[in-house]
Length: 143
Image 1: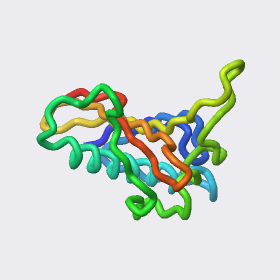
Image 2: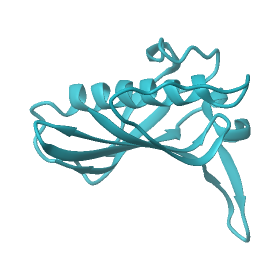
Image 3: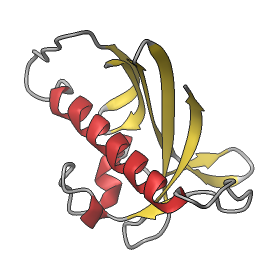
């Protein structure tokens, strides 16, 4: 059972924690984040599946370029014509004083309980290329 989802830099969300319970009903006016919250969960699931698929039998995660790549065609549950539409304010890069720019990452961390054991898995989504590819990497795991 999922107990909490934390979302950062995704669509209209800056940084939000959503507590979940046995039954969850999202109610609110248009453009308040109901669909975005569900899409963030869908994105997380796509990322977890891709991560598991690529790492199955691979042993230890490599230090260099540990992420796996997804593209917008993988995002059927989060239909967007361009991957940058997933980012808060459509910005995949931001200025850094005296250093140029850096990538803005989407973070989705999900917590839950399975068989009485608590777990927490998070992914970061990073804009990778102009063609809409996103590189995902694990940011935390336990359980």
